[in-house]
Picture 1 (cartoon, rainbow, N blue to C red):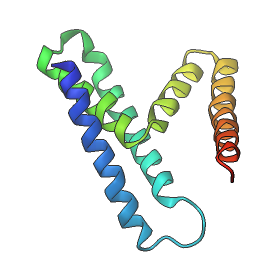
Picture 2: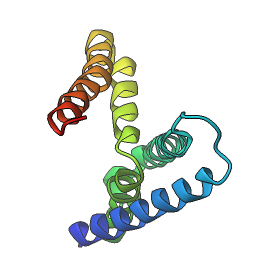
Picture 3: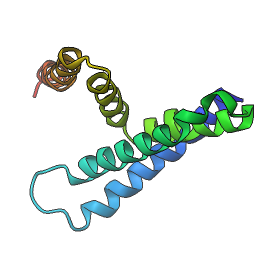
Picture 4: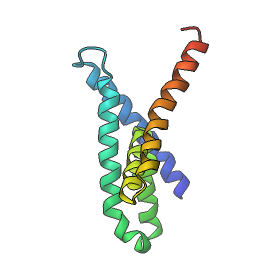
Length: 126
């Protein structure tokens, strides 16, 4: 049941991101990736809000409630934007006193993905 919930949520999140990208492209000006930025910002807000609301009740959730939580968080937010998970994990690191790990997470996630992307871009002949 949990895997199906994640699958459905991921599909819905991906479709929502696609739709948002099409909508934002109608009015976006300049080279800034407004659709991606907006998806990342919205997904982060949703993931943190859902997780923060559910956290005190995790031990008492029924199986169907757990599946719904997975549908919304891992599924929808994950399909809408993986940046939301990055942000939540970084916030949790700061909150638990792991500022160095949080800074490393930021640096490796942003710089590391940019470097990997650049290497792959160049390897493809661009």
